[in-house]
Image 1 (cartoon, one colour):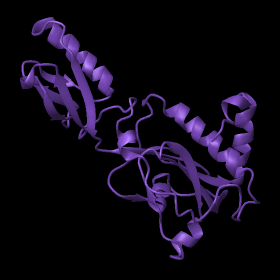
Image 2: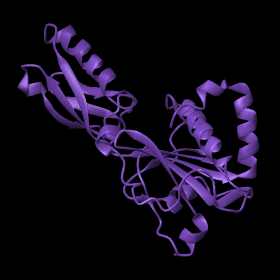
Image 3: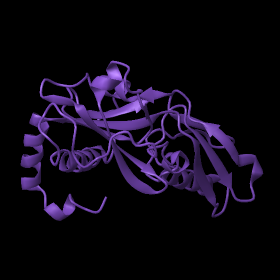
Image 4: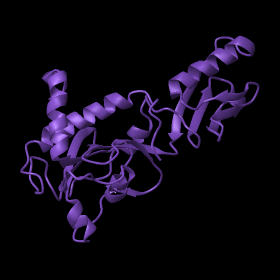
Length: 239
């Protein structure tokens, strides 16, 4: 399922993904081959820092997310709540509160305002994300439909590329780069879709917040056009 374009920061995330991905892929060999500065067969390219990712301040709540609400010294209003199918959470006294599309800090501010207006004097409210129902990944480069997509449950690289309607006619399936945060550091690993599809190599797991960039001749030209309009210092930062 593709995430709606209204998500804040999605364009910036796509630009960063494209810039980093193409900067590294451009240093590789010709289309149709492996190569480039990003290593293949990395045994240390493990699962990301999921607890940190799931609790990032910019995560916007959606149905199925579970939040922990703590109203200082008011136990009756504190506890875990699940965002329902309508995007609301149900609280004693207040009733239904819209949570979908808000960050935890924005929801805390809304609850503070509601409680202060009718029930409590200067309430202290904290909201934390306990469990995210769906994660998000970015698929960019030489794919048919680049974008940000929701993932639910285990997902592999082949499945992630399929969400973007597969590789396009200009793609180099032998060089696909996945960017991920591991132990607090941004890291990257390269994969060969051709050997994965034939069963020679395993299909690697993809996690929430991963960025996937498929190499290809058309994506190289798009990258050249992109860097002409963006200051180089905004793109080539230490990785």
